[in-house]
Length: 281
Image (tube, rainbow, N blue to C red; front, top):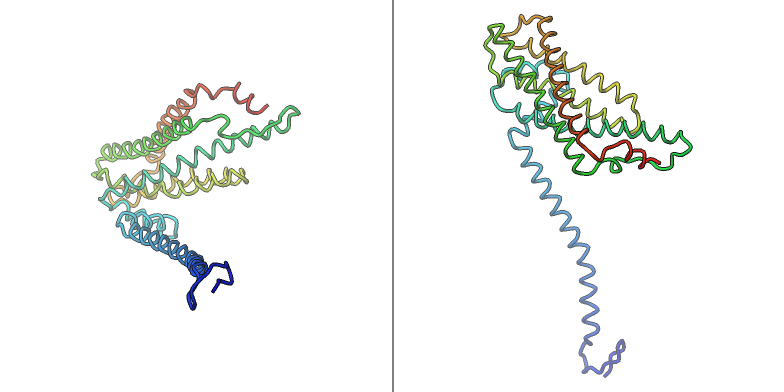
């Protein structure tokens, strides 16, 4: 007896090996999609479990609640509660907000600069190419500038906190340093969020990004002063004393930022006018 498919000789009532191989291959093909679906489902379940465990962390949950409180109508109560905290949440908040602000400032600034330069080049008859960030900055340059911005922002926070603490001592008010830090770290959250959205809008609506930046810098003194007034020891804090404190803090912080950031940029030997012109034309 011969197989009708392959022609091999087989015994009576036996099944040819080619039929067995064909059946096994069909079963394998049918099981492959199920295996892929099972693996995808397993990965998604593991990711959901990791996210759930991450959110169960008390500090993560606290940070989420803080951000929600500072971006809601309950902002004043959130600020008042911040001035009563005695934990280290302010360290986490200032690191997170500084990182977000660093990315926003860097890419927002260079995105705006590149758009302006490319717009200028496109209006010239000899402009032939579009300048990109990678044409003028290497990865090490980007890293150096971002580290400089991050360090200056963290230093600025300690300048605001330290000068406010010294001011409470001069005014003979006993306010623990960590309470001031918690209050200030909460007050910087709306400005961080607005700066982040300003960076996004630099890509297609620069005018709105400028408006958001103005709103960000305007929200800082308002929230800091409101936060100071929520502290029981500083309820009678003078508005003019606050103006002097904020002006000094902002001036020193601006100087620190300029020294860090512009110092990093000027130390980039490859970031020259000749390279910029060569990349464009």
